[in-house]
Image (cartoon, rainbow, N blue to C red; front, side, top):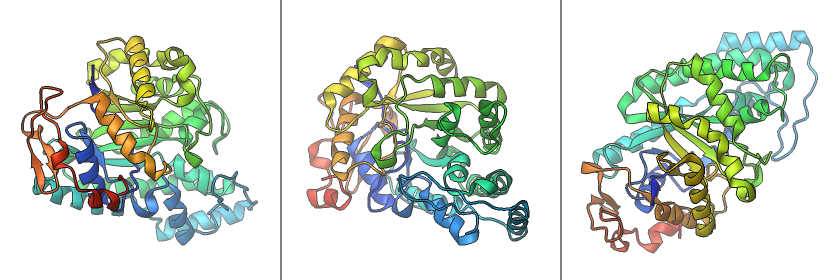
Amino acid sequence: MATNGCHLVGSVPFSSTEEVFRTCLQQMPGRLKRIPDGETGQRKMFTMWQWLVLQEQAPILSAKFEHNSLITHRTYSTEEVEAEINRLKEVGYKTRWDEPTLASYQVFKRLKEAGDIPQSVKFQVCLPAPSNVIAPFVEGAFQAAFEPVYEEAYWKDLRRIQDEIPHDQFSIQIDLAVDTAFWMGVYLPWWGEGDVKVGVIEYLTRMINQIDEDVELGFHNCYGDMEHRHWYEPTDLSAPVERLERLYPHISHRVAFFHVPVPLSAMDSLDAFLAPLKRLVPRFQADSTDLYLGLVHANDLEGTSTRIEAARRVLGEDCEFGVATECGWGRTPEDHFDSIMAISKEVSGRVLVGIDEVAPTANGFAPVEDEINGGMRAKDSVNFDTADRRAVGVA
């Protein structure tokens, strides 16, 4: 039994935003309700590009960051911290999340108007909680004081995005990575005292309150992907489940989709790993929340099928879910992309129907027969040629 579509977490490091849209829709036809811009170029490493933004505007705040290394913080006096924070308040800090988002939306809009993106597919805007910039890239002495400065600038970008993109055309996915480290006590946040989980809920609530009710909202839950590895191998999904349970009473916004990773390290205990999710199933069903399990691993169709079987066994046959990878593809070996998309297509069913039940071609979309599923699917005859596929790193 096929799963309910596919989900792209965020980073798809192809050569351009347009290549991300065209290639992913072609390789996973009818399976994507939402599609991100791929965070191409300097954004492919999650929030690392924000370190450059910070260095440009406030170099004294910028931690000495070395890839895959622990951060060594320097010492600053209270006067130094206050002086720099006051300067930033006066000149105005810019996070610049709006600029690439709005540029990518113009590509999305153009392709949709040309018929190259199905009408019901939404542009997925992936935005991390501010903690994913402050914790890794800001000097420890400045973190607490800089948080409201960063949030104010971030909320302005979020407002501009919502003002300039029609609300029925996009979704916002909040990315939670370092937040999971906070939640599990692996990494101590800047506030440091009291119930850390309360602090996480407070800043997530502040962010969600900036999102208009008619803008679709979802979450990507992460355990990190530095060097394509987790900073912690979870034994189960208790952390993201508990976090959402504790968040629900504080927000009125419906959660439209929810993504969790299913790592290879869970293979020997899949039932126990997935079990906490059962607590969310009734709420997901009541709210029509799309659940996406990050259980697709490259070159592992058999293992992916085993993980799907375990999810059906644990969550129940009446619990629908789609598939995804554990995280974005920014650190994924390029020669894995083809396998990931092929497996995702193989194990999933279509979620687009009616006018959207079409298959992408090099010149747009056209309906084709599907002998396998009794519906429609893209045949080899409508694939980009090999040269085109090499250009975007999937051949």
